[in-house]
Image (cartoon, rainbow, N blue to C red; front, side, top):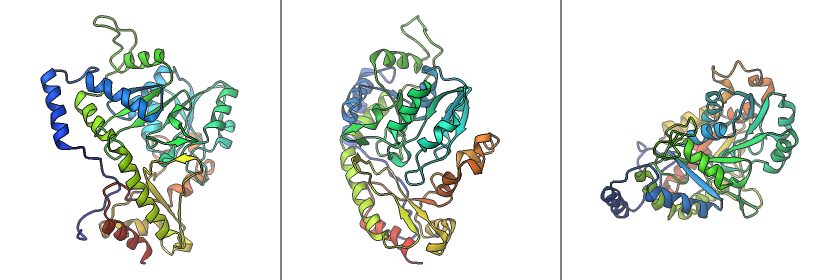
Length: 371
């Protein structure tokens, strides 16, 4: 790889092209392109089995299941959430006419800090929307205890958490609902897509109505739904990717091991280790820069990497609470979110995907270690 070629943060799985061609031919032959076709049904079934969850409902992207979950659970008023996430998390709250309330994060995991949630609850609070940041599980037990105490719903943004398990059980079974993103940058993808994890058959039917304009039959509309269905082409692509996702996760694991071994003695660099009892998916590999100890700022290293053709990502920077549309919220005050600001101002996610070569990995590490 030349210096002009880029090492990017993520790389999509690429299915066997002959198999994909055969499946596309089946779609054309059946003349069934969308609306709950055979590949769509098959993918929902196989994903539920693979993930160890009761029901999966496929969506056309990862944002719409979050929107629909809030709608399906009739969430109103205030929703407690994290500022340390992709902006879609908070946008979905806003689009449902609710008020986002930001609380600070755990400085070790980047996840919402349960100890800060209870103080943010008001009579208008109806739900909590935590995020499994970088695929690391939230403290789901404590979050559920708080939700039960105050009668709140819990919707997990699990965009990064495909296949993640804690003590042998999928973390997608936690809360009232969880949502996934199958964007091309994710561990598992359908090019663009997403899903909602649902715990009972009746709710699954209702979700399926909501994502198809509310239609319950040819002439019956039972809810003010939207159009967020996944088509047959992407479902076929997803079926093929599901066959190789375990190999991709293991390849990412090996990259993470090399990063950790090489960086563990580098002063001023912190990274996250695997948690006990957790099956990780290695979605991302964030490092955190201590400017005084490392000798350079986070941004100095970030732009140095870019100059050398290594595309890291300051993920998540800036905080959602810093965007102009949300910074007027009382809960967006930096004084309320010290841990989140510290993490956002020090993070770089290193290139992490199954297709990284040894030369790629060495180049990434050289940009960090050699000053």
